[in-house]
Image 1 (cartoon, helix red, strand yellow):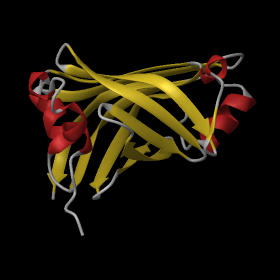
Image 2: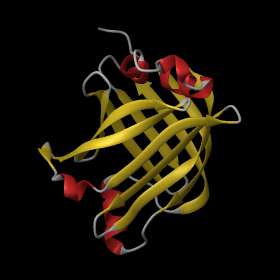
Image 3: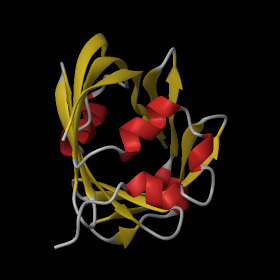
Image 4: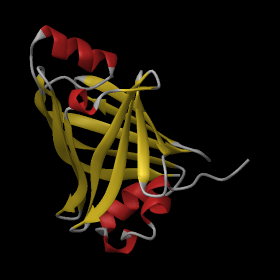
Amino acid sequence: MSSPTALFHSLLETTGWSCLAPAVQCMHAEGSVIQASGEADVDGARHAFARLLRRLLTLPEPGRGQHIALTIERHATHEQWTRRFARGCMRSTLHPDGSTSLRERLGPVALHFTLRCNDNAIDWQLHRVTVLGLPLPRALCGQVLSRSGARDGRYTFDIDVHLPLLGQLVAYRGWLEIDHVR
């Protein structure tokens, strides 16, 4: 069996890994299991369809100053991320999807991102969405802004998802510090 590979390091090795902030490198490259904790502000539309879709995709519910605990489990072919917010538990599986691309599966939806190093951070640029393996027309994919960076020596994240006709599905931003690495 292969040993766990740090997915982000392997995808960004030739396109700027060394330019990333130390906190970003640590979060995305150390150990086979990482546990981190911090705080997040979560926003999103409050209507019933947005709440239902967040529940289906295991996205967190809105609330400011939520405690967040992250566990990243690295396997030979993928990483399993579990984010426990005060108002929800979000699980996703991340796989390589080309030389600098990443596929993140949330329930029946897979988001396909191109990763770019920019200003000591990682920008995740959405280029395709599939539902149950079938491609979603680009006009229905909406806009996903995602950035992993650092501030004051802490790992930071800023995610904002808008869908056509729905508005803001979810936005969460905050910080994490690594508690334990195995």
